[in-house]
Image 1 (tube, rainbow, N blue to C red):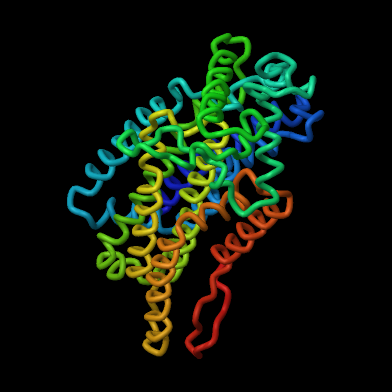
Image 2 (image 1 turned 90 degrees about the vertical axis):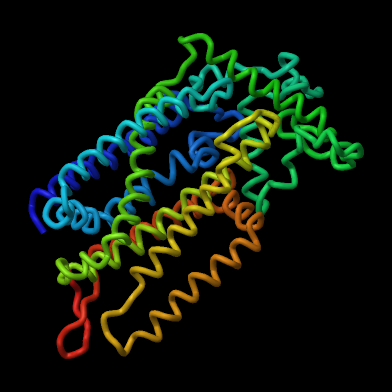
Length: 409
């Protein structure tokens, strides 16, 4: 494997990793250091990081882990296209430029956000000054048509820490017009946008006011947060990363015969990197769906969103993608371990079927462990998992001729 391929991949991956860290660092700087966001209601910058964990937690942890795990596989793939694939250099460069172009377009479309604005796009001081509707309702102890933004976020955070999921509080704001009776809409449940027990219709109206309030704050350029600006500029890097990881793995599957023929000394590292990278990437669609569940508590579900509609399909695509990698790369080059190989593949299929049957339960626990309900301990657990996986990537056990193992550094 050439040094040029290693350097090319290293430069790209380092830039991506720095962009991931920069976005979360901006959130900490603006909401954790410069201004004590929501200190009077027990909320800090970690509330936003947990609420938007698919952006601020996944990428600087599991995202960086996936880059490290896929460094050797990606370097092999670049080298393979440069040396062994017909017209490989041209095909590689065209694919690389197309990925960049798609990332810029998708990043621009998603980053604009439309009418829905994220809380981290508004300066912390502006959020803190919001008094709800009618103004001062929360301080007076009265009933709010819309509670202050900071209070609503703090309420979601508080309850999510205590419960395995918040799906029971997400109200249907777009009922089927062909079904006349909607008993669920008449039930009084806690609404986080008002911090009171109300029916679905009233809660949906409050959630619409919540979204409108953020949009109104955002209209004044002086109210816009540095974090939102950095996020928008760096979003194409995240999109590029998601496209890149998905494509790398698929190309490795397509070219697996060529890999085995020309890169035999690297097969162990390639196998370990692909499987750990795939496992790390499965966390993102789970965090993404956890965010969408939390979003339904404050923004409601009435707004049309292609992103919301396709997110379950994204999870299904990643699960199928991971299964494909397991079938092609979860293999042993020792005949004595073939039974273990078959068991591992079967476990992947069974695990996927169990996950599909318990889809909502898994999302509920994702909210509790890696979403709005994440605590210091669960964040610590995420970091520990990443560190352990990192050492599994760097210090890979390798068989010796005598049949034992040694660490391949």
